[in-house]
Length: 222
Image 1: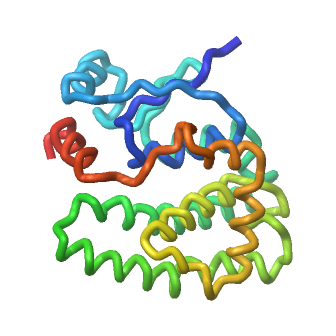
Image 2: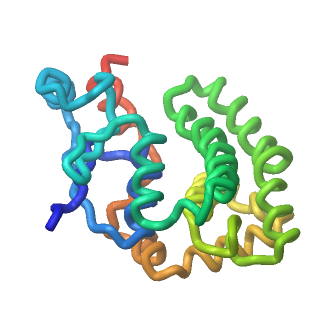
């Protein structure tokens, strides 16, 4: 029997958080090996564990997988969260890429100056309202299903809920003009595996604070 996936990353969200979400939603238990010092990162590099010298890295099924998108696609496919055919996968990919772009903007905020942070926070809220959330709202309204693709729970649904919660941390009432997304959030949040992941004490990580960012800068020499 294969062991649990082991996740190598810092003790924070970053690019690993979507991987944590996907595994948790699939009901897969996983272990975490936190990178707390630059020496830990350099050891992984020296040992040849990081194909492109970067994390996140996930040990799964005898592989040491790197590159966030590759890891997520593998997990989604392995646990039947990636559609029934090529066309459904294409839709899942498009929806996921949209939420990836939005969450990427949010991830950069703690690394920015106060002035840039204020400017980009306003941009995130504007883009959420006018570019990203209207797409998902329309999709759910048009097909009338509970899930984004194929009327079946998929990676796209998990990623969208993660994005919604991240944007709500920036602006709590962001969904006020999106009734379909409000209902979607309630449905997906109550899926048992996700409900468990959203409870205190889970492996979900909090938003980055100044202490975490300072440590990340030391680890990655940035």
